Image (cartoon, rainbow, N blue to C red; front, side):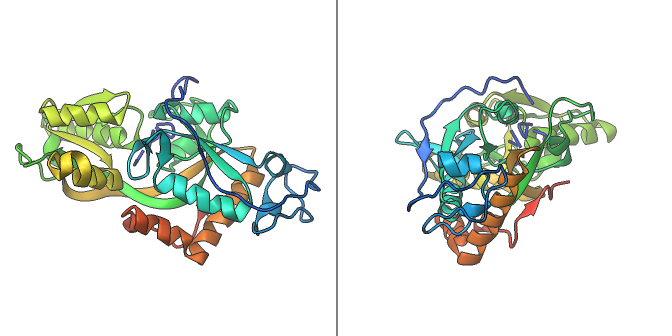
Length: 320
């Protein structure tokens, strides 16, 4: 989800109160082999090993001992993450599974509200947040839209690239060609996301140019925004590009929506980690680079039709 401070303001790309309510079950991702518990420091210990997990020694001791990394997500963004048959599936869970094989731990996903993910992470409810969260300076520094300090910032391990897309009801009855065509019209969006920020930015551009502002309708979840567009109450919705493309392809057999124009403001999605959890952050970066190198990363993206978001190398706090 191209989520501003907050595409998912958790990171928006999805900073609200601490109440990320679990709405779906968990998905335990694979790990195998026996583990020694010789590590004694939070930074991990080079003597710690686990069969079949080349990067196990890079993990802080806490995760070597527990064998689990707890992940906060908002499972409403197919193909990135969604719930099917009671399980959280998609690009992010499958990437996490590949990371788990490198690190020798399970990634346990719990779904909650997007705009509460970063707050829940910094409160200790999750070890990481992985939910199509756009990495940007606001989230890194914990700032609101005006630059005021809102809370603790987070670090990001960047693993994917996506922009914002505009989608309309099938047939595009209002002939929307780009986000610039939304001046004076109603647009639906999920609250606290980077694409909500994109709409606010466009609305200001409209009024600065002497046109009417965009009538922005923000919803708690993206499903409500989609319903608003489908019913005709909003002429368009705004979402992460891969999510919008998947929505247009699958909703009502491809007969509900269509994507218009090109994606805009492409930026990195990042795995959010607490600022003081540098050991885990650095281990995750190594693991992302490892799955890119061994080809498992590409296999995941190809499986979900998300290859346009592939990157060549992981980065820490690469967002602007």
